[in-house]
Length: 277
Ligand SMILES: NC(=O)c1ccc[n+]([C@@H]2O[C@H](COP(=O)([O-])OP(=O)(O)OC[C@H]3O[C@@H](n4cnc5c(N)ncnc54)[C@H](OP(=O)(O)O)[C@@H]3O)[C@@H](O)[C@H]2O)c1
Image (cartoon, rainbow, N blue to C red; front, side):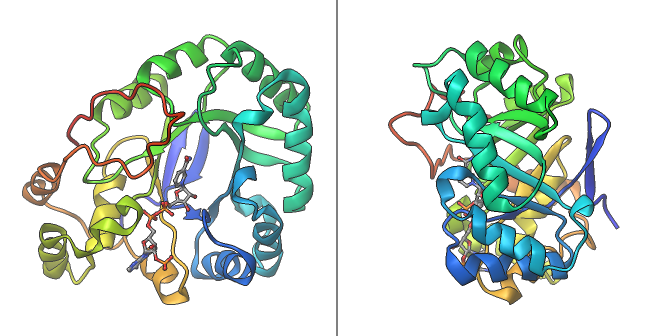
């Protein structure tokens, strides 16, 4: 049995979180409830996903006590000014039907608003108890270092999977006790048919996706956020704590690195060079 939580700054974070981007309506509310019943204790959403109300329904329908669940949301870049952060936080909490977020992230960097302004506003909602931890998403090593000058950064959520290595961000996360959250752990679905991952999986009775999740979670300070719609897939993605990869298998997976980004919008920062593993 491998670890099911990652310990960061004295808090235990469930290593697998259920991703909800693009889940709408019943797919979202029932997906979150199914995930909780299957054993997930970590749910990832964002204001911009327009599904916080459905995530909230799922949280209530799942039959798991609120304090046992890690809930993350994200503030969108148009709400980064001082006056807007608080309103956005309240709207997220209201839609989710909860009193406090476990983690609240700046969704992307917005060069039009100084980091200090947004992080000061986030520290205020943190001091008021509306959020437990604050963090960032889609930040480079340099941006995380800049953010760290203005607040205690708990997490950086970035695209991370065998086709996109993040060795520099892993090293930074380890050095500063930051959680590195791997989003799109299946490369947004691209790697389910990967031949190497499929072959390695066959030896363990696992799928390519399960191998990718196991590989991610074998890195220090890393949690992963797979998204699925069908209940059997939601459950399958959680079954990654009962097998281990050999060093040789991990090296083969490291070799799949190809700098593949599935999320690279016009407003993306000047990314770090991809680095294997
Ligand atoms: N911070 C950010 O900017 C950011 C950006 C992107 C994503 N995220 C977070 O990361 C989460 C996951 O990323 P993602 O949604 O891009 O993609 P992903 O988790 O890498 O891949 C999802 C795709 O894999 C398929 N899939 C899932 N489990 C499967 C299984 N067991 N067998 C076969 N296919 C399977 C899904 O199909 P079905 O859904 O049809 O089952 C979907 O097409 C998001 O939901 C979100 O919470 C954050």
